[in-house]
Image 1: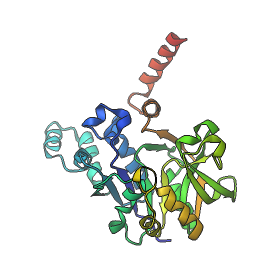
Image 2 (image 1 turned 45 degrees about the vertical axis):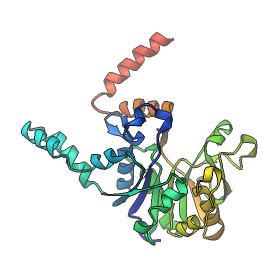
Image 3 (image 1 turned 135 degrees about the horizontal axis):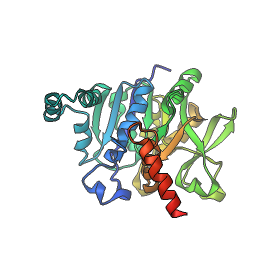
Image 4 (image 1 turned 180 degrees about the horizontal axis):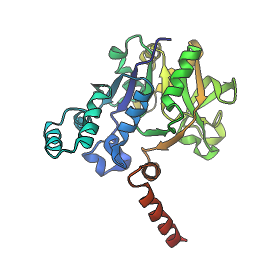
Length: 294
């Protein structure tokens, strides 16, 4: 497998679970403490050696592109006010990687969104990071994307991240059927999209991190639309698993579902508790508030 330098991040969703705020603000730009959640995902990818980020966008998402572009008026004011620390943060945004935007003209599912990036990806392997999923690893642990890339390169195989979930939650995820190769490594045999608990093949769920060889595009091209007329990535993954092989690993790290209101609030609280400027103040507040609630 070639070195993996490209990543796809689909950002075309409407964010209906966060209406009315997402009527005018893309859900990917909602803040987790002081950064939009999309920036956490891009930082994860860049830390794994990714150089080109391909954003699959829908209409009314121009603020995402603007965020990573030059902001002359703001930068000029920061220079005049001698706020160089803040200026460097702004400049770092546009220099951290190459941002490439592709318009998904029709909402035809995740598989279709991924396929839209094929002209840029070409025959290169790539990472896929879903925009609703925020991952946290401490400074001594590789990012989840880096863990996947390392496994894919070591074993020359497309690899997906998985996590164990309670039986009552399997209906929320794509669930994989596997042969266990070790406690943390699995051969993927099948993928079932949002099964009922009694029909679930395992408790291993897909939390939105993948590394694929470019052959996934040929399977996506031949995947017929399923539910709601959408092209499902999981259908192409099943074909990939049966033909070229697909593996899964459990990852080291924490995952937050930032597409869910509670998960979004949880991410804000826990990232704030790690933030050097406000963590002590927040700890005191939470301790005081917890006493009031008991």
